[in-house]
Each structure stands twice: as structure tokens, then as C-alpha cells.
Image (cartoon, rainbow, N blue to C red; front, side):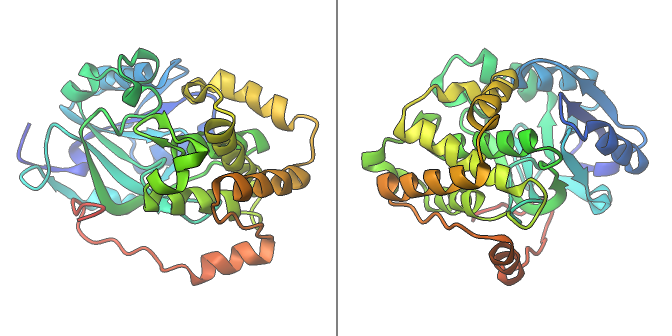
Length: 299
């Protein structure tokens, strides 16, 4: 692999599963990246990414999730592997359409093929730290810049599942659930900020309340009830969770009930923001500014 490579010379692989907006998003990607390849319907996060590595023809390739919209500015960048580890996964930030958060969730990912094919995560995990995410057991370069928008609110179910999965992940330490007695002491401050934003902000956008509810439920089930948090790697299981929890209930009532429980049991600042509150939160938030394509997220 060359020390320097233009992003536009890399293979892009679109990884989709059951996202309700996947065809629309793929059409958008093909307009920007006509050479993009696609992996669709592969069961399991580990297996789907390995399938992407197998179709990619470049030693380092870019993956785009089925709910992600690419910013074309990324195509103008050049990656210099003397600045970052060429064998590490490169993860750029994405902007969340519901709550305005800008962080690694749902963002563009650069994969060294060898690293991708050799990892054992999610459904193929052999260690607890790899059961629900890539980030703890596979070396990462977490990068500052944002080059995409993650659209996770096409349906109530999609929004709820996205929120639930983040609610679970943010309530663990390297894949191990944080118990109520130590939650505030052990949760990383940045994760607490992200988690409570998911729980509180988004009522101003379509299906945003379902994402808020999902985050609250995921945290509650993981830390307070001690439910099977590993199920977040199984999207079919997540669909069942949505039906069981919200199929016949009132999302507004559930938001209040879960919010009260989380504040009491975990002592975390969950806010019951309405549409105006959510719009104001996003308006006063400090805008994200891109810097260098390989500048790290935290120095």
C-alpha cells in the first residue's frame, strides 16, 4: 500500500441490510462515487464487513453504512499513512440527523483489508470486548473530521433501534455493562454527554422521539435490569425489542416513565426536551469545524 493515496482512488463499499432508506441512500452514493461497490443483506456485522473486504480491490477501502449520506468533500482528500497507523481502522465522524451529535457513530470508515479480514467481532467474537462493537478490540484511529450525515429516522422502528443500540453501548465499559452503583463513577464523561443527548434531544424531527426512547430503554435494560445487551448485534432481535416495547404503547408516556427511572436510579441528567427545546439546543451548540483529514478526535 502506498504511503499516500487519494481518497478518490480507493474502493468504496456500501454496506446495507434492512435500512428503510437504503436504496435512496445508495442512489445518492452512486451519484457521487460511481465506482462504489455494494454488499447487501449479509447477516452479522463482522460477516458483512468481511464481505465488503472481499469485494474491495484496494488494500485500504472505505465503507459507507446503509443509513449514511456522504459529503463529497471527502473525495478531495489525500491520506498520508505516515501520519496514522496504516493497519488501524480509520473512523471519521458523522452528524446525526436527529440530535445533532457529531462523533464516530455511523460515520465513514477506512479499512485495511488485512485487518478487516482478520478481526473477530460481533457474532464471531471470542472476547467480551468485541461482542457489540469494533472499537475496543480492533485498533482504531478515531479522527476529528466529519464527512457524512447519518439518517436514522426514516421510520419509528429505525429510529428506536438506532437509539437503543447506542443506549446499550454507551452503558458499557469495553462491552461490560456498568451497574447502577458505579455508573456515574465509571462511565467516560464524553460517553455520558453522548448518551444523555441521545436520550434528551430530537423531538423536533420526524421520529426523533423514538430515537430518544430507544436510548433510554437501551440504557435501562442494560444497566438497571441487566438484560442481554449482546442482542444489539442482532438486528432481527432488535426489531422484536421494538415491537415488544413500543408496539402498543405511547411513546410520550414511556419517555417520561423511563426518564424518571434513569434520573432516580443512575443519577444522570436526562432532559425531557420538547420540539422548541431541541431546536434551541442544536442552535446554540458549537458548530463542528473540520481540520486535517487525519487529525485525531482527541489529542
